Image (tube, rainbow, N blue to C red; front, side, top):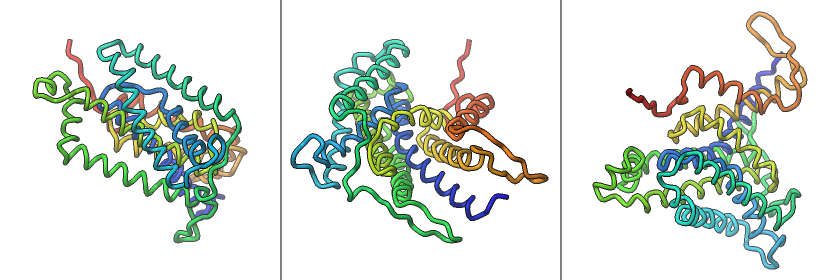
Amino acid sequence: MVDFVTFLDITISGIGLGALYALVAMGFALIYKVTGVLNFAQGELALVGAYGVVILGTSSLISTPLPAVAAVGATILFGIILGIFLERVIFRQFIGEPVLSVIIVTLALGGIFSGFIRFLLGPNYRSYPEALTFGFSIDLPLGTSISAAYALAVALALVVVVALMLFFRYTVTGSILRAAASDEQAAMVLGVSIERTIALAWALSIGITAIGGVLLAMSSGGAGFSIVATGIIIFAAVVFGGLDSIPGAFLGAIIVGLLQELGSFYLEGGSAVVLPVVDVQLNFGAGFGEILPLIFLLVVIVVKPYGLFGTERIERL
């Protein structure tokens, strides 16, 4: 039988995990919404954020590390600068080029980022400063709890998704970004600087992704290359919610986190699952929790090819 409190604990843990994914997923959706670029280096960019704190906040490479909070702030700032640099130096050269060319560039960049970090710090797991390792949980009603890292992720993910929605809806800059995303040529006719618009989108995207990478590392006490493997899970979350929808990316990530946690706990190893009529003993192998969101994604995409909130594109012949 499934204990109700245990079910709530796993559900809350899934929401926390989904919130970690959501920050990286929203960065992905933001850049696709404005530029149409499928950035398959998103997992590696999260890795850059995670290891940025290791480089700046520990004595791994520098003799006088920054305080923990300053290291996080500097890492996010580096992410913003990196976004502007990538747009100016690399992606601006591919405006109007085939989509496949841009995808190959993002894959190459992903390899460069992960390889460079491996060169600097080696392949081993690196612990975070003690001030950033939250080893305690926060008690919730009904005897449940949530880890402090997950609680922080939920709070920040909610702040980011609301801030981005308000930004796009009520600010002049956000309106410009929406106009550029809708029709670049029309926006240029109206005097919109497409180059600055796209640079801003990249800066926001990688800055948010860096925050996600730092929180992913904080949830496990330090940075490891396993963060890269979350890239495919995050891509599934974005596609599920809708590639060009920031709220969709947020909701898709939460659902993916829930499916992963519930699937890992109840389906791996043959836990008893209560169905309306009879208890069924399901026995899947280790790792099924990561596969379950992808299976669910395939089912959803068959029914809604553009995801839950993605913009449907109709081509007339």
